[in-house]
Length: 335
Image (cartoon, rainbow, N blue to C red; front, top):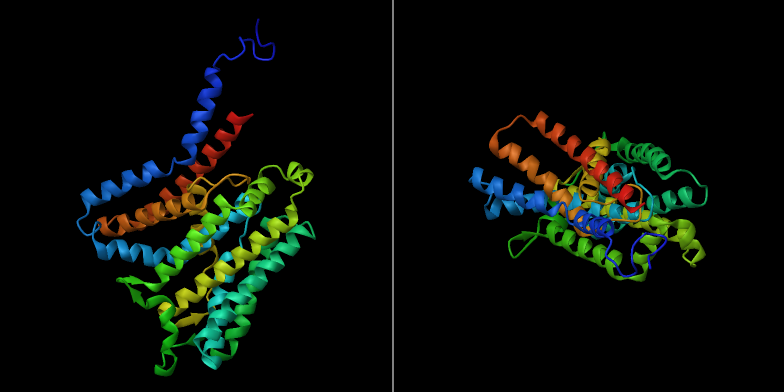
């Protein structure tokens, strides 16, 4: 007697099904293999690469990007996309510097992150209540936010300096050291671990996967999809602003020059290369971390080996195309 739907005996193994399951499982960890391979190659070909100083510097330099990418992963998993992170990164730093000059570093920190949370909430409302596509909504918001940053710095000639002796305590947020590791790196570790646990181990995380994977079914199951998506935008805005605060704490200068396109591209590149689906419902914070560090290793390797940095951009663009192609291919397997 055969299974009419599949043309095989009950309990028989479906080779095609096993292959699909294997491919989908491997896809989740696919970024690990090229990361380890690149790490090994750079360790063998560049003497300065595998040193404590260089590896610490990579983590420190990528700390803001990792914070924003971890939060951005939640947005993509829930079925959205946030293109305003570069602008919010700028505004968070500018706001923090402005408030810190007047009221002290702690007030500056809270003001900077608070502005980011507010922008994230605005994004969430626009996307979920007014039903505007998140790509368009956050792209438009980025122009508004950059304009706000320029207004804040207009009276100071476009730059807010924290270099004066009585203002330098602001640098403690990013440059203080514990166990020879910069405080910005420790902040990154806390944020990444916290968001990773939220996505992977909590009910809220399961709701994010449901909202991005099949929102109609999620609504029928009682998931408040709009609330879940709005929450991810709030988290993304706060994380972007925190990243901006940390970079200003490191350099002690905030300016109105927008890092938007480059910063946003780097964040999204890390998330997508890490294997998070641009269509929602799939992804993990740890994958985004590996994706960001993989791209960072490429840049570090180009610098250490003396290659033309123009080729780095070509490689990064190619990686994104490959990651998106793999995502589309793996989704086709599930049909």
